[in-house]
Amino acid sequence: MAPALSRRTAILLLSLLASSVVVFAFMQVLPGDPARVALGVSASEESVARLRHEYGLDRPLLTQYAGWAGGLLRGDFGRSYVSGDVIAPRLLDALAVTGWLVLAALLIAVLLAVPVGTVMAVRHRHVDGALLTALSQVGVAVPAFLAGMLLVAIVSVRWGWLPSSGWVPPAVDPAAFLRHLILPALSLGLVQSAILARYVRSAVLDVLAEDYLRTARSKGLTPWRALLRHGLRNAGVPVVTVLGLQLAAMLIGAVVVERVFVVHGLGSLLLDAVQVRDLILVQDVVMVLVALVLLVSFLTDVLYVAIDPRMRARAR
Image (cartoon, rainbow, N blue to C red):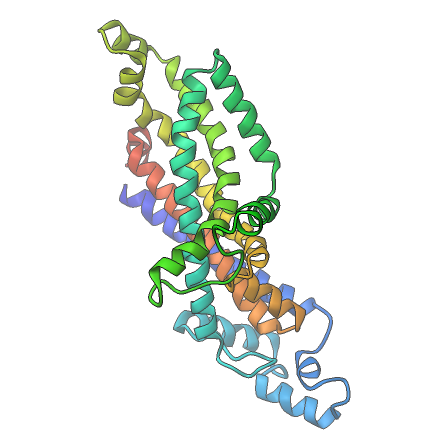
């Protein structure tokens, strides 16, 4: 397994390097001068030139990239072009918020999708299985932001059970933290659970057709006991890959969901930075999101090898 892990680590590092180059290059081709945006259209050319020098925008592009990438490795994300504040604390606070939201949504998706997808497969020739399959198809078609708006309209506005916006850190008030977390996590997790349930259904259907499961049933095990004892582990192998892709999709989907619920995570930070053309902050947030997606893909590959004996044999 060590050679496979080394290869995947090398691919991760190369991907991060290539992504940083692409993100930096993309920001350079965007129209507008950050110094001019920060000072306003009425600022003199001397003031703009002085601020460009302070930001390092008058240096060669290769030098600018090296300084930015080196800062990322040290945990230094630079200073905002608009406010002049250090970016790292704001980025870490937003990352913590998005992390809680995505992890809660992932937990909801797994807890719903695994049992529902399994029932959909086992009962696929019955009315209840067909009904669950149809409901999951509807869930796939609903975007996360629309689910969030529906939850706000029903749970918050009509019933008044949970707050419709805002965020409270868990260290400040755990109960209020959970109340503010539930709706955005549900809006993100319910949609992803519908997608994941269909993959679970497909994986379990494949397992149900295997000879070893029929053999287990012929030895006296009920279909459910045979599936739980011998089938779910094999069905989980392809689901893990899909789950990794969904986790990456949740990171991106959180950008919109956070806006719906006025949650100040990475998504809100990114959109606010775009509105005021704070390009260095946009650059940092995009790079963090890309790095998280690549890291999720890396961990998914490692977990895939760990749980699949055939992949471990090939990796030797």
